[in-house]
Length: 616
Image (tube, rainbow, N blue to C red; front, side):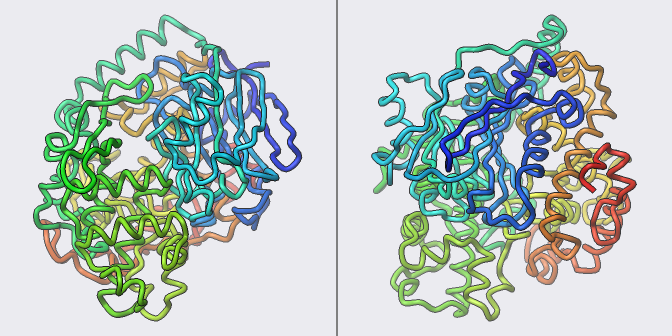
């Protein structure tokens, strides 16, 4: 029995070790409780991966999951891939734009689960109901664009959508990405390395099916209204549609959040060179959109000058601009653009790459890490050529790149001494370009995010700095009051939207009741705003239980030493830091609101209340 018209009712399971495939029914009880997307993926991962599983073992699973809105006209859709992360050891879900995930649903599947390890490098070919494992030996070493084009040529169909890895994924770089439908990356958590560990170069999909909804007229009218709301939003009109996410650079640099020289500061001189305005004038050719998205925040870019002129690439996102740019002491947009291009083609997460390179630069400058190879590179902040060389070395695990491929936490452990004092990560995941000094709520959000330090699990900065009222009204920027409530509410809302597999920007100008209306029209269920948020809370507790099972507790809900002990040197929040005492108070408030125990573990009562008793 199909749960609702917007579901296919099938999960495709592929065992690479045995060469077997099987179609499993999608349980309606699971979708009613967890909806799809992140909820479905978290449930599958918890059920299929045993505690203590090595992320690179055959027993780890790689899951591509759709949501009930995937493939419909609902605005701002994304795709989801999930596994146990080789970078953090936690639950890890990574999101991507483009059209790959819609094609998977058109092929007839709500999710694709991949386990085992192929005997030789292979790619998976899904053509509606036909599934085939093909030899990919000839694709070894190819970059992501080459791989996608090669597979489309081999299959003779330009409409095929391809998710693939580059050389970094083949070599199990712990922050390797999966490129989905060319230039749309699932970057965080090293899931490309999981794919590489399975000897899987790519997944190619072609689907000719369609997606229905329970109430077509109501769904159409609601979706059309949401399209208009997004287009009329001030943030969309004045920033994202005009300059993409890089439109946040000037705000961030002015407010003291822009990560500079391994997060030593939150402001970089000449930061306007990296702004969205600058990039749009210097690099953009035209705008580009993901599936059914009216925002059109992406762009096709072109380097017109210098040694890398002629390079065509995806527009530089804010996070990439911050981590590969200012965090490495760079303000030349063309150098940052080429660094972005290399990461996309070779298959590296730009956030982690910029984080680990900036970390290495500081260690070298402080004399903590001395190495002849680093000396030869003249590895200092502002050396763009060194950044480009290290991206290649990391991707191929050559020389010092072999150690950097382990990520910031791995480098700190190997170098030893005082290296850990300057390691910027949470649970092993390199921190994004929204550091928390000047926004204590952001610190709590980073510390408690389920996949490690992440801005896509809650972004309290809007409430703390821009004055957006929280659930109980406005809050003061540097105060601790009301911050735990905002973080919990944001996390539940983000998680609920992730069950639909909607873009974070799909929340712009909309509230939980709006998403609940769209979900109700698609499924035929009657979902209130309160129930929609409860779905998010249920999913958040499920991913927390996965991490608890892996040994993560309160001790891991922590922040880098720099954010706790070094005052912010400049900007409106100059002198601010989040002390250990501050963080502990925030955690106490947060755990109380979550109804978790003092060690950060969900209580039996809470799990029973959420209908998660089976996960006790």
